[in-house]
Image (cartoon, rainbow, N blue to C red; front, side):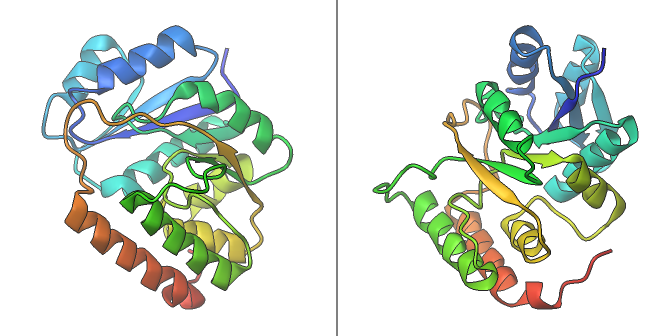
Length: 230
């Protein structure tokens, strides 16, 4: 029986993590469907998924997170899922928070963000500082406060699934959250905890993280004013 929710798991070179992530979901949270979107990995990610019989979209080339995520939402739209959640393949996202996010989105929201910071006031990590800068930028441009705009754990309603699936101009980034807010999307946040990456390397090292924050700030404050659908 098909679930109302699809867990979309973009994966690039996650051979050290993918088995633990998917096995845990299958064993403990089998009420939800999932799809691994292998984003042209150069390691054994696809091989492991095939050998284990995991549900997988196998992209022949690396499209990046935006492309892999959109492929997952196109799949969700084609299959008629009511909700979809972006879920990291590195083990940082915790599936016990899916249910409260699902309950929240059913209250009528378009997007629900799993927020690390919504109830935190005093954390001063680099991640928190960067996130707060984006929070301020979104507040300035939309009038709405998003406590954790960089969280990758986001749930989408059918309306948003359709929007992402049918338009090319979307990536799962804070500037898209800002753009959707400007265009009337209703967004809420649910407090979550996240784990640290256990194995493998994140693309966002200190240098790349700084570049990413600057790029997002410029996009939110300036570029989004000229952005069009499609």
